[in-house]
Length: 545
Image (cartoon, rainbow, N blue to C red; front, side, top):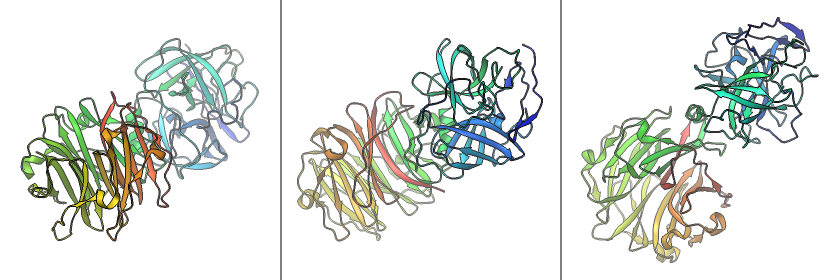
């Protein structure tokens, strides 16, 4: 291929620029879509139009919304000089994105990849009305048909107001890029740079980077080639989610056991979810994990993990996404035998842990300095055959729920360290079938209890009021439907109760009880990154500033 260069030319207030690249293709953007049909209204609503630079010297590109806060596009769109490296941080040139709902939003931060023409761009204000694109997790094979969408030139238009689409076939894929060719006369034109490349399922597989522009408006009339290069994005899930997780606001940290490991994901403030990543791969290998607990403290997430060998370990995921190593809790707080379950909650900067071992419940505290108190038996003499425990923080006190003989019990550890006697919750909130799982959350001055009974086939909720009275157990079937819960977890997130449930048919469901006591519709959590069916789970709230 011969190197091709386009000279700058002014039209409709846009500076048309192009960069010669080593393979001889010219950039399909900076400055003004795919030579193909106009996109039907409402389709590809995740596609956005970018304008980079001032009014007298601007360029156009296309981008894809990945969630309410972030766009994915080509890094070359933000280069001050064609072919130069784009630094992370605030864009050097004024940059805006016009979303499919008509709103134009400033771009305030960019995060480029070093190995391909890809960048994440953060919106100044989130788009609550639009849904991000679904992303593929495998590269398309040679011969696969893909769809490109963009706001670039067509055969007859210089600056279209609506995106157009085109069909392309994959020639080949390498570690970072896709080589594609337009079907028929479809081609990528100026302004399509950064636009989405989608597989047959509508999943994002690539970001358009550069093309020959055969048949595009104002292109070389002798050029007929419709080939193009796109940057792969199917392998960028963890990189993308790492930036998504920096979104400010209340987040729901989620730990799901699957196979022989534990996987961490996040429900973001806009209600979308990141994928799940292997905790042992990020921290250190415990030889398998069968259960966990989590608690948020000052933006960090404290994770307790029960290993397959029965040990108890602790680690911290910092607010910046980095992890510490697993530490041996038994070495610091004494060893427990036959450990079956653990629960954790924060009170101030202290981490309170209740573990079920040898049919009893034991309590320990990790203070802000990292020191642990010895485990103390808090059930012996009152309750026997304890099978499950839950914890909540309410008004600075630790509230604990235990299951003994299939029935729920409740106690409070007061701020002076004294424990109140165990009370039978069934006598106050009504009887249920035998309880198999229990979780708690403190919201305001109230204590929420959530239980699964009858081998998980029924789920109930009750609330302990500040005066010590209880509401009657309410059936959660109207909200979750008919499910069999194998594990459940509750957390208070920004004053609301959130519940996540693992089901026997391999799903994780999530719902929210709002402050007005209404319930949101259950959402099936996308389990991208999980190698198999989900097992036990734990959720907790963290506030990212």
